[in-house]
Length: 83
Image (tube, rainbow, N blue to C red; front, side, top):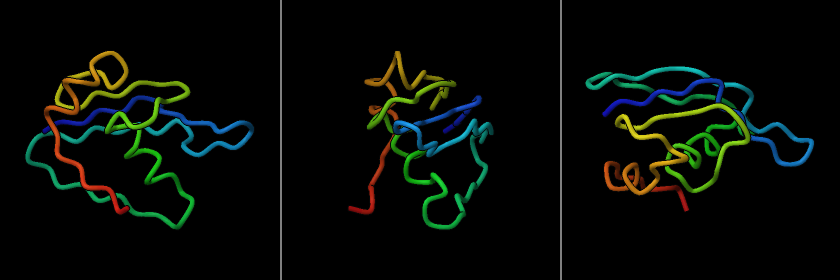
């Protein structure tokens, strides 16, 4: 599974939850998401799994755009949130 983020940003009013994150993970790579509480890890995962829309930027999961191809993204992944 591949994941590509390009300047992905999420704002809640004046609060910036995710500020222009960019990275790529290619099939076979192991990636960890580390950071303190409030760093934007859960918000990023919610955007990648199409539970919330980004304010700006773009992302693809398995080659599918999270905003325009959300059904394809959801069909290609398995995601078990904490709650």
